[in-house]
Length: 512
Image 1 (tube, helix red, strand yellow):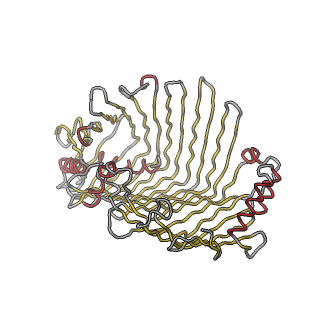
Image 2 (cartoon, rainbow, N blue to C red):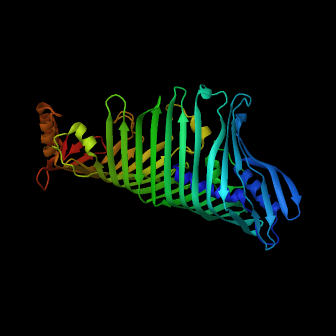
């Protein structure tokens, strides 16, 4: 998950673990009980010591612990003291003055040696956190002018070469506000809405050889909306399939108005490489349920630059007008075929002159923007729950978790350097026949192909010296075998068909 999505999700946990409830019949104990119920729903335990002083209730040494399966270790978050104040108007609030330290500890089977830990220190600016509702339905409201964060006391334990390396993260954010609703019932429901004016971060890692990599990034105008349902009986990370069937679900959508990231690698004080990327408006949605896991994303106005300063210096840059993705994967075992989607698009691909100059300094090829679009849908039969990782790890090499039943090429389009290829098609697959096509289910169906500018592109590649005349002749003969002239100049078309008895036809002529 990207940094921006992770930050938006953390805002939900931030509200749920730093704010508290509201009406006169809600107490700090009710909030603490809701925290414990949430921890139990994810298979963990929330502990702490309660202290009362007038209208203030403190929970000192609060800790969330998640045990790994089969006694293989644990993951712990140690929070700063949670101090709840009765405002006298049916609400509770928490004061976050001063640095707040969150400690993260991961241990393996042997806690004495298998141990990684780090502190994240957060300093909030003018934070206002309140809660309202009922003991089993609490709405947290938060707003703060800004915050800073940084890692401290990073310890990689006895990991190989860990003592010779270093790792730090720091950053800041501004104009943060949002709400988070925590409701208890047959399922535990978390609903969050967040807005960030901006977030910036810096990540620096030094390896044992002395190479230092520094990544910086900034995200502007971030929004996020999320809804999570959790089964009350707890769940195992090694069998999320069971949790899905018990009610686990997740939905998230987010936007940013702009972003930029840069990574620089320095060795012995010299910058050896760098890469940078900026992007305009972007949106993303992620969901998970018993039906499927789905991700859709879109980003615009993307610019990328790469520089390598060692040896033969290289500087490359490029841009994309638009990038899209749509991926849907079913995850639950079923005797009936289920829908899947695999779609990806890069539109308005532009290469910088530095990159063009590496292979076409004479500008023989057209510099037109390129396009790559693929949109595939189909049906698959799942023979196993894909998110039951315990079961999946026990599959032998000959076992397949899924069968491919149908595949539709809704769109396949590639255009670059004055040439283009497009295709559509529909195929069915016979999973009882794994012989005809060397181990893959036997396909049947047809595809339509359109090609334009191919001969012109070959001529230019010959002029550039990248393709020999003999190789070009072979390519033209191959196109002649599989395609017929199209409607326009320098255009070809072809109908490729695979019959149910294994024959392959090109424009009605059998080729296999």
